[in-house]
Image (cartoon, rainbow, N blue to C red):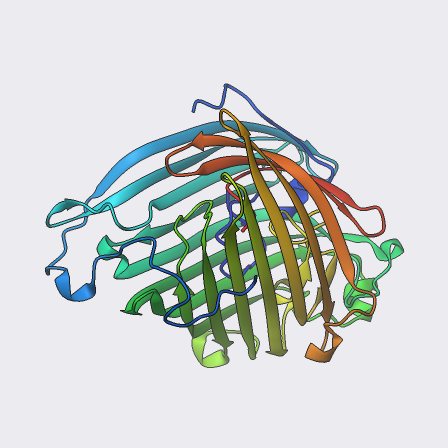
Amino acid sequence: MPHFINKHKYKYNTTLPPPFTRKAIFIYFLGLSYFIFLPFNGMAQKDSLNRVPVEKLKLPIKSPANIQHVLVLPIIARSIETGWSFGGAGAATFHLKGLRGRDTVSRTSNAEAVALYTTRHQFVTAINGSIYFPGERFIVNEQLSYSSFPDEFWGLGKRAPDSNEEAYSFKQYYAFLHPQFLVAKNLFLGVVYQYQRVFDINYEQGGLFDTENVLGRQGYHVSGLGGSVTYDTRNNAFSPDRGAMFQFYFDQFAPFLGSNYLYTSYVIDLRRFIPVYKGQVLALQALGDFNSGAVPLRSLAYLGGSSTMRGYYAGRYRDKNAGVFQAEYRVPLFWRIGAVGFADMGNVGPELKDINFQHYKYSYGGGLRVALNQKEKLNLRLDYGLAKGGSNGFYLQLGEAF
């Protein structure tokens, strides 16, 4: 279940929307049937995927989907913000076929969908996925969503106090498309497109949105086009136990693309997965989200949620720039059950120099994992996070945080 209602920048981690993650109780019913950083040079890591060299792929490639597993979960959930919510989630994993039949050297493709409705008449629906074409010569990531949802706002900056909390609501359409092309071993170049329309924003007149002159508080749409470079040696799409990923991408939002605001977004995502002992894994991530120009409300960088800084409400701290470092230790226990412990730290600020140790934020916690698909390492994730200042959050999600 993807990170639907925040804009947000290529986070193909399966997570519920922020309001579903603050002091929420999730119940899945009807069963579960179902060293940052790697030296990025030629001697760094053997290609554990054994991808087919581009020159050996015959063209044209015929790629019908060979669906391996389908997971369908009815959902009932409750949170302070939403009351009870009901809906369903589905996930499919598959390999695409080439001329010679099923491609067994590429990572598993996936597609996910969710729809939720609450007793307070709130609604969210989304589709996302990652498709690996034969030999991983071509990869497509996509996310499409619509949401009508409440949220909370504490103001901008790292010093926003708890007493500032104001409720607001909005509706949003969001689209993210990211095709990538293999240009060298483990190296991909891509094109990034984002579209976001935010409308029907309701907030307290004369409150924080007005006093802090938050851009976009009257509604807006933005459209941005950019590029990416990715170096990826991870051995699994869902829960890697070795390898690394370095990714940088940018988006230019401009009027000639149909955007109401002119700004540029940059994202740097560094991940390393280190096998330790008998299936135990140390997972590390450094994530930077930087923006320059006239950045509207829901394109601002932020801390919190079920993917980064667990324990903080998603968006508890917002500004133009954010930086996060997180570490997670994953341990298999017995049967399909595993456990994790994690610790995160980060900060926000209007300038890059503000991403420092002054008023920095931290969180920590632990959780359990249930392997829904042992072969593909697709896990059900149950996490509890505690954050500086007493904030906490309970998360039940499909897939790892990163």
